[in-house]
Length: 151
Image 1: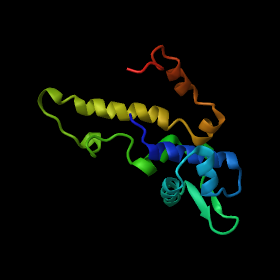
Image 2: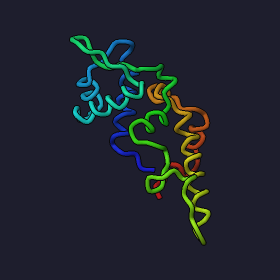
Image 3: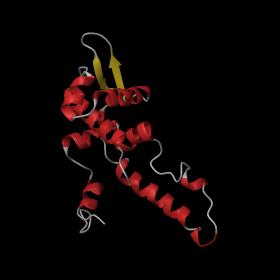
Image 4: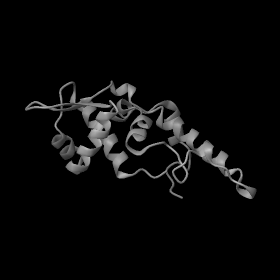
């Protein structure tokens, strides 16, 4: 899985909002705190607002705040908002793809891949990231001998 800048920035922005408390935070403050280009961040915040993950408030004391409790926003929720489905093949949902001949099992591989990503991304919330306390099933994956080895 390749995490693009839009997903990375969206997750970091939401984590920053979790740190801010109940009041609104200006996009400029999030941008500076996380090193995210402001214009790019504003577009991401618009997507997150349309999905109800953030609420915007106009005016002198305006800014952004979480639209839901950080314990209820999973990484999967955010990825789906800013980047679409967790797994697709050439823009198609894996279960809709038909392969023939020796490649027929690829469909099941793509579906299994999506399921394994869900195990992690639907278990971890923005609050978990902010607190640095990942669920036990995710921590267990990190303890595998080759988890930190790039291949």
